[in-house]
Length: 213
Image: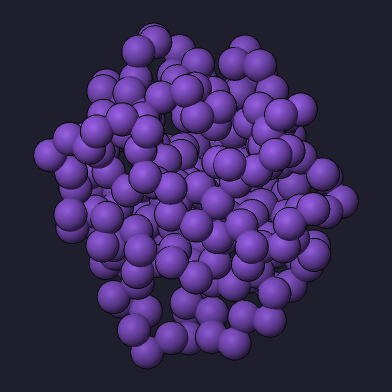
């Protein structure tokens, strides 16, 4: 299996770029240029947006606005046997069982936490001098989806509360931060993950931080 460092890559869309999202692209890179985070947006074509998220995870659609994609596993040979690798998503009808709704403020905080390293994090977002800049970039990323967007996460902290304080909790070390390994990620004991799905009437955005340990 490849190491996280080997997998970090920026994968351009397979179709010509549209008008692009320069401020969005820049915010994505500032947040997620170092840790291994999957970032991709696709069109929404179904009333049940779970089908559109599956299309993003299987890399069968491109960003409708030509935005940046972070996808270090797009060319991984593991996809020959698991097309959505490193994801092993459930069928669309099971999404309500594994995702929990989030308020926008909590979704912003979840993106900020994804900028943290999964191992040996020297400066969690909550203690960084540029914490406000990190949160501003997270807002810029979510602004793309508009004020009416809905957000969902696999974090167990959101199971009974749509507004958990992700930044205050941050990454507390393996197994203690409340971000359960979900069926989205292949390997179970090999990976820990935190995911966010953003949905509006036209697009679905998928953000997934994956740490190998």
